Image (cartoon, rainbow, N blue to C red; front, side):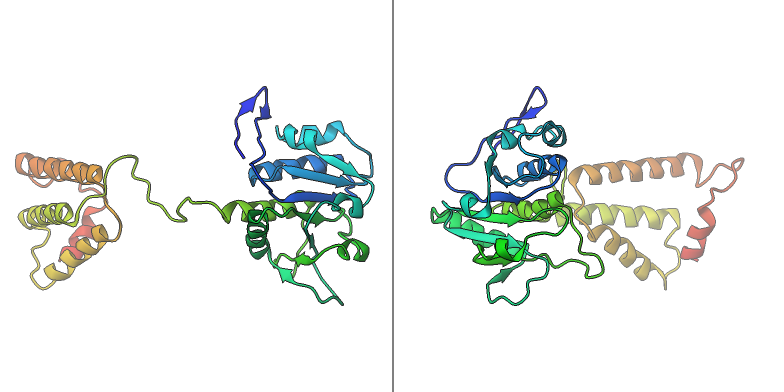
Length: 280
């Protein structure tokens, strides 16, 4: 699915081939249909089918709540019952918070999304049923499903609204094919410094600290140097950060040589006493 905006409406294009169909069974509020369309657009789902909406279709309130995902609502199909809504589908999943007295495959949202990718990848059409807001899918609705989907949530509060339930599955569907690395380090174009460059800075810093008298205590000096080294080695320091730190050391060194450690007429800064204790 691709996107942009024209006059407040998202420019949404269904991906080629098969992708999951979101079937809203007897939805009660038009606003919830609209927020569901918004959630679908976020997760790269395009096809919506609506079964027996309580207030009919279309509904202006749905468009007002869709946050520009009008194309999904424009293309939504309305059916009188579940059987007709899924007649052209090869696989049907149903969301069910507490499946009972059935023998059927059960998936969480992540596993369901992976299954949907595999099913659609074989050119088969798959639908996922979401029940009405108040009570969810009924037993008769679930009898049309070959797989049930359950979200493991806080057992003390598992209530979801319709759009939230669709959003969870849409997110997992998107992430099943997402190639963005799960962890990144943003450097804004400046390279990460090499260990050699970092060692060069640390050597200079230690030399300046020796010259300033900060490391005057021989028994404590090795540990203090190690602490400094661990601090800078802990992350990925960039070349720009090292240049800034070199500039800081240069200015501190120049000021110390020109003016002494602190001008006699100025009071000691608040951190001076703590630094003195560390080096004592």
